[in-house]
Structures are given as C-alpha cells and as structure tokens.
Image (cartoon, rainbow, N blue to C red; front, side, top):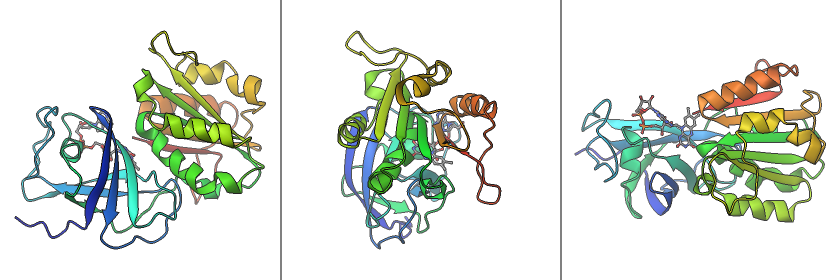
Length: 266
Ligand SMILES: Cc1cc2nc3c(=O)[nH]c(=O)nc-3n(C[C@H](O)[C@H](O)[C@H](O)COP(=O)(O)OP(=O)(O)OC[C@H]3O[C@@H](n4cnc5c(N)ncnc54)[C@H](O)[C@@H]3O)c2cc1C
C-alpha cells in the first residue's frame, strides 16, 4: 500500500473521554512558525483500522485515498516540531474514527502549510478579549494563551467554556492554572448537566452572556470599540452568539473586511 505521504509520528495520546482526545504529533520536518489560532490538515489512508467504538461510516472511505480534514492547533506558535490537537470523535466519520485508533509511534499525515484567519494577533493592542468555546472549540484559545498571554497584560482576557458534564471541560486544569497566575485572565466554565459537586455556572453559553455575567463580574461590556469576541465551536452556538453580538453593533471579521467578532465553526 502507498504510505509515502505520511510525514509525522504520534508522540502521545491522552483520552479525555472515549470520544475526546489530546494528541501530540512529531513532524519529520519542522513547520514554518504559524500564528496562534491557525489550523492544518491531518490525514490517514482509508485502509487504516477504525476505532473499536466507532459506528458504520456514513460514506465509506476508499482504501487507497488519503482522508484529510482541518484541525486547530493547540500548541504555542513557536512549537513547530511537535503539534498538539484536541479532537472529538465523530463515530460515523471517516477520519476521526481512524485517528482514535492511533497509538504512540504510528505514522500519520500532517499538512505542510498552516493557515487560518482566526488569529489573536489581528486584534488591536489594549482591547479586551472574550473567547467563547464549546467542545473542541477551546483548541485555538489554548494556542492564543500559550503564545500571547504574557504579552498582553493591559487586556482583560476571558475564556467562556460551555459543556454538558465536567469531563467535557478539556484543558480545565491549564485554564485554572492561568487564572490563578495572571491577574488579567478569567476562566468561566459553564455546564448544563453537571453533578452535585459542580459549584460553577449551570447555564448554556447564550444565557450566560444574556445574563450580563461579563459586565457584572469583570466590568467588560460588549462594545465593539473596547472588546473583541472570538466564538468557536458548534454552528448553533456560534450563530446564536453572533446574533447577540450583532445587536451591539459587532460585525464578522475578515482580513479584507475587518470586524470585531472572529468566528470559527466546526
Ligand atoms: C478550521 C477548522 C478547524 C477544525 N478544528 C477541529 C478541532 O480542533 N477538533 C475537532 O475535533 N474538529 C475540528 N474540525 C472539524 C474536522 O475538520 C472534521 O470535520 C471532523 O473531525 C469530522 O471529520 P470526520 O472525517 O471524522 O467526519 P466526516 O466523515 O467528515 O463526517 C461524517 C458525518 O458527520 C458529520 N459531522 C462532521 N463533523 C461533525 C461533528 N463535529 N459533530 C457531529 N457531526 C459531525 C458530517 O456532517 C457528516 O455527515 C475543524 C474544522 C475546521 C473547518
């Protein structure tokens, strides 16, 4: 079988849940320095085995075809030899069911270019930054924080992470550590079906925003001049938050048509 496009090796794999993993991949050649929040392709051939808890593929993969999908990079922008990803398994999906079957030492394809316009470096210095995430949408923010938190002491930076149960909060310990370390960083996890041990918010992200938690707790107003919003995750949540921001005068950012809300759906 043709495996020559494989150009990287799995260095570590942490199962956060049976359908959620943090995987680190060593590339044979270092990548060019990228910007925090950008993404690249991962790929495996159709002949690779699928995970034991996957379900029949909606569209069966062809054996000799390299299946490629985009993934946000979690690593700091200077980590150009080893890339970290936070991936959720789509049980009937082509690529994730194969990625979840990988073990340390297995070979994989990693894109040779890194792209994307979901970038913290395009926000004006001094503006407050609100990062809203559901599910694996937290991935680009970990890259933002690992790369830039130390450079932006004048900006308040807030991560709002929504989930269902406690175990949905990937990177909880890293985010809690950052909150305890940096006076300008605030972490707001919110869960809609947590057990009785949870003493945080129990609202969906949309209700948390509508209840003025940002204003009341951190004195952050949804004002396009003063506060930039990043929104990343499932399309429903992203479109509800974008609608809410639209009412405050926010427009979607594109490098050719700059706006104050940055959107990434997946
Ligand atoms: C810029 C960008 C960054 C991304 N970053 C990440 C990331 O950091 N982590 C991550 O896990 N994913 C990320 N994705 C999504 C990723 O590219 C794949 O779409 C996803 O992993 C599914 O691939 P698959 O081959 O397993 O499923 P496919 O075979 O492509 O899809 C099978 C079926 O499942 C549906 N489906 C696809 N994705 C989902 C989903 N998430 N939930 C439910 N159903 C779905 C499809 O519509 C299709 O019907 C990103 C996507 C983009 C565009």
